[in-house]
Image (cartoon, rainbow, N blue to C red; front, side, top):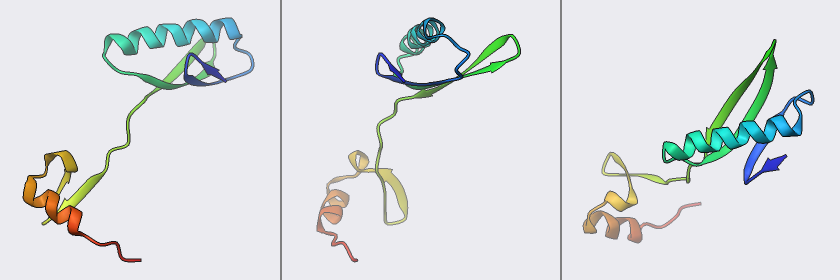
Length: 90
């Protein structure tokens, strides 16, 4: 199930109304922290509902040039040129 762009996995005993309330509360919490909610898993434990939430995070590419790991935006012009000149070996 997807609610407001958030993937939700919930046990069948949890009503859709409860799910919507929990997702809305989690979105507010994450937005206050400046983060974006990607997914929520709801599990019943006795009288409580356990909420596991996952942040939406863009995939970043980390490269190794001369032994140092870094993202491409942190390379100087020489390292960027070295990266552009590389050829892929299959």
